[in-house]
Length: 581
Image 1 (tube, rainbow, N blue to C red):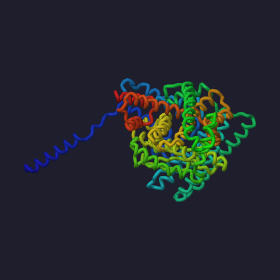
Image 2: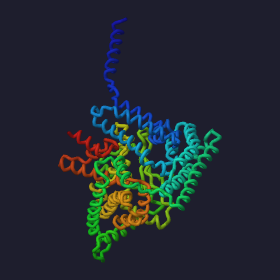
Image 3: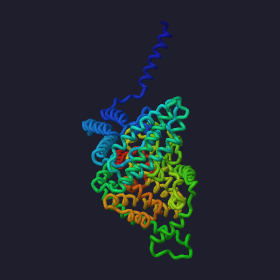
Image 4: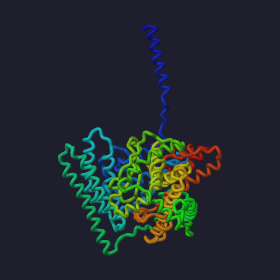
């Protein structure tokens, strides 16, 4: 071997050694990380529809049949992991791992409470809907169409067994949830007809028509059984009450919201905030009065003056046929403002797509955001807006007065930029899978409400008094959500008095008030998450501003807060304060 050859070989070896040394060091998994991985593997097998919705494509086409055995399997899962996580040395966890630990523990405790105590699977028939299982397959990009067809047919084959088991679980449902289940499952039939069936016409499986027909018939039969049950229970007045009572409300409040406050404390705080908000609205009403009513003195009754002014300003709104398009048109303006004011960085690669709310989801809220899961990050974020085609002309006009040209902007901030859409994009960048999956609703809704105030504080809308007045009307809705939800389940608030609260005290249009009443009867505690979340985030920011003075940077605060994913606000505050120390 020549000296030159030896030199080249030595050089190659040394180069290889240097290359090896420059490779990143792979940290061994901690005990917590190993258990988390095992936990999620088992969880996805137990909850394939959830897994598919998060982007785990290997679970598309799988459907859990909601029978008695599935409940026992879930209880066994919970018991197993409560025991395993109890063995974790909590003192040895990092701050971030400790939050993950608490999130998983809360999930396990919430789930066993739902099964053994709350038992919504027995009285809420809207729990059962296969639409969400089909959606990931319909919306996924498939290189191989045969794989899509195979997964769709697999779900269709399982649909009859799913609904047969679902009906067997029901025991004295509420009238309200029966109504919602009928409406949403009828929407699922339309979804299958319009979105699923067209995808199957190209299938090489010639049996698809009979399989599809069997699935559609199963959903129709479920709806028919619910309609019959509703008629029977109506005659005997044998419905379960949608009101859950103080004990269950308090327990659900603690498990769902995960805040350092009781329901009573938030309710009392909301009532005080309602008075303060009315004072702010009075201030702007006095500024605007002469512009809209130059020949009329300001009314002695402040509430009547505000109501008259709101009615006048609300005349400026979209048409029923253009409402969704107007929502779509406004988003670039919001993006430009956030960039101009340097409020936080926006990821231009993350697409936000405005669409009609899928038929199987309609009936619960006006607008919502459907973000991609951590295993499918390239999927667009969908901004769902419910179309107005089912409303009468009178009801649609009332709706559009509520969502007028000013209020629509607040809605788009809340749902879009820099609200839910932006927060969930940041959440997906969190290194913690736990924080991405077990998103805390109070943080998610709280950020969206906080973003509304932040945008206006920074000059969005050129400090238009009309926009500020409408903002405070919107914020009053947030405050009254907490009052409504608490009084509904703890004080037996009647529908008459609920509508009075919403229409007389919160200035809401009749359609909006009626829709909110319906929503309040379908859910519990969730309506309290908006005000609870906002008040925590805003107060924390204001305290930090006061402590830091001129050193406070709004963009740094926003991005630091969002960097912890959708963890509970109290935990985010702890993590931010630890890092600052």
